[in-house]
Amino acid sequence: MRKGLAAALILLTAGCGTEIRNTADDCIMFVERAYGDTRPENREMAYLCKAREIRYGSAPPDAYVLKAGRAACRDRDFGADDAVSLVFLCPEAAVAVGGERLVWKAARHREEEALRRYSVAGSCEDPWPQVRSRTSVTAAAFVDGEGYRLVDAAGMEPDHGVAAVPVETRKGAVCVTVKTFRAKPSGRPKGWRDVVERGFRADAGVVNLADSDLEPIEVGVGSWNLRVWKRGAPPREEHLILFYPEPPR
Image (cartoon, rainbow, N blue to C red; front, side, top):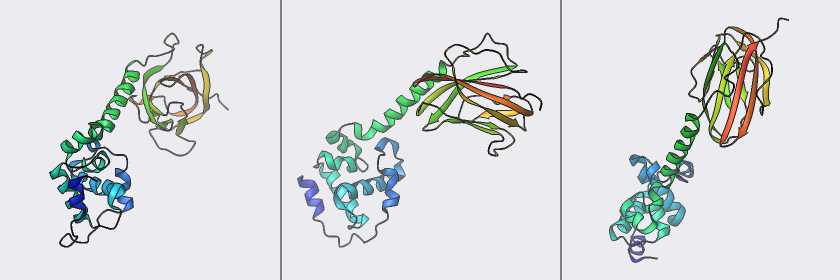
């Protein structure tokens, strides 16, 4: 144990109070969070959570743990293990011991992921431009662990104005083209396979693609056939969505 931290650890708890503000549930949000992703008003709490996990346990009061941490920061005498928690009290000193990854690793990862997603989104193009349709729009749907949804603007009743579309991409952008037709189109572009085919009731006549850059799509009020075709795989997955009227019954 380093000298500065050792001295802080033998401080008597007298005068430090007995309050322990943070519980295990409070600390869940800070388990993987880096300094650069933590708001200034939450950094003291983040330190307490990580310091208890790494060194102190749940017994000492908050004031004691904070006093020990500030003493270690002041003396700048601690190791890499304690730097993981102390970065929230004295980032410059902690970075000198543990490296810049303590401050910016998570934030940099988020920025790189955003750039990758928008790079895909910026390259999305209509994969079937030669087919004449009533309307056609192309954009990116952003997914994070699940698929995306097509939602009628009038409501979200199950199997009425909502269609869930599965994806292979677990996190990122999927290129989506939506086309509407006055009749069922013939054929399909090469290399595409069916993903979804079902009925879709549009009471408002306007469909939104949740979590996407796509403008609302005017399909018209009524019952539609919805067909989704897919090609490619992460990181370049593409979907082609067709709306055409259901045949009269």
